[in-house]
Image (tube, rainbow, N blue to C red):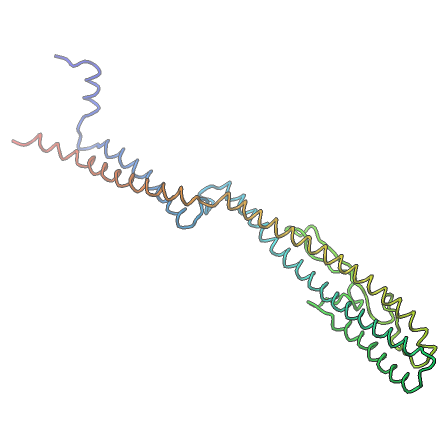
Length: 289
C-alpha cells in the first residue's frame, strides 16, 4: 500500500546516509554563528568597547576616530592657551610691581620737592629714587615666560590656538613698560636731586602710574579672554569625549547578560552537533545478523 504524499516526503527527508549528514551540517552552522557572536561579545567585555576596530563597525569607527582627532587637537589648544595665560600673568605681576615702585617714587619726589628740605636729605632721597627707578628696568628685563616678554617692547602681541584644526587663534596685546616709553614716561636718567626737578617729576610719575594701571587693565582683559576660551575648549573636549563614549562604549550589563546567554547556547550547540554526529552510527544496527 502506497503511503500518502506528505508521509512519503517526510520519509525521503529523513533518509539515513553515510555520505551526507544534514543534521550535523546544520548544527555546525549554528554553532559557528554562536562562536562568532561569543567572540564579539568577549571582545566587548575585554576592551569595554562595542566598536574597538573598523572590523566591528566601519562607519561608527571612522566617526569616532575623527572625534578623537578633535579631542587630541583641543589638548594642544589647552596647552597653547595655558602658555599664553602664564605669559600674561607674568607680565601682570611685573606691571603690579612697577605700579608699586611708582607709588614709592612719587612719595620720594613729593618729599624732595619740599623747599625746607636740606641738601643732604634730598641727596639721600635721590639715591633711593634712583634705586627704585633702576628696579623698574630689572623687573622689565626679567618678566619672561617661555621666551616671551610682554613688557619690554620685544613682543607686540601673544597668540594662542583657539580651534582644534589651528584655523582660529586668539591674541592679546603686549604692554611696553620700559623706562622712557609711552607708558612709563620716566626717563632712564631721571632724578630728584633738585627741588625743581622733584616738583616736575611728581606729575611725570603720576602720569606714568595712570598709564601703568591702564596697561594692567588691558593685560587683565587679555588674560580674561584667554581664560574664557580655555574654559570653552575644556567643555568642548569633554563633550566630544562623551560623544565618542556614546558611539563606541559597550553596555557592560547588557554584554554580561549576552555573554552568559551565548555560553549556554554554545554548550547546547556542541551537544546538538555531538548528537547529529552519532546518527551514522545507527546505520550499523541495520546490518547486524
